[in-house]
Length: 86
Image 1 (cartoon, one colour):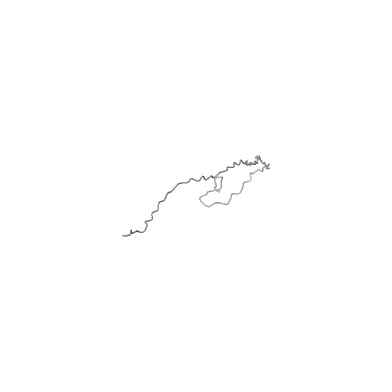
Image 2: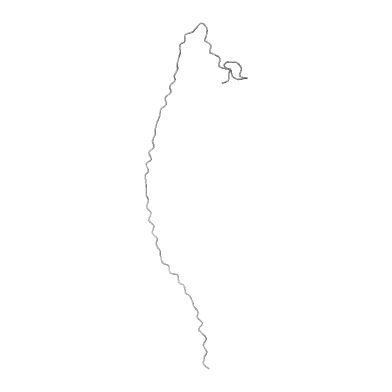
């Protein structure tokens, strides 16, 4: 009899090889030196003190002049006098 052939069995074999490609990434650094002038303004100020005094010359009378009593305040304030509450 003649030979019988079955369909060809297809097989795939992968071969991998790593190839390194150099990648160069150059960097340039520029250093900037900056001077910043800061002007500081001063405003000196002097302070003077003036002390004032006044005087009055009054002519006296035979009887002292009494100042009128201020209007009475509501109780329990009491009579007129230096202790009166304001």
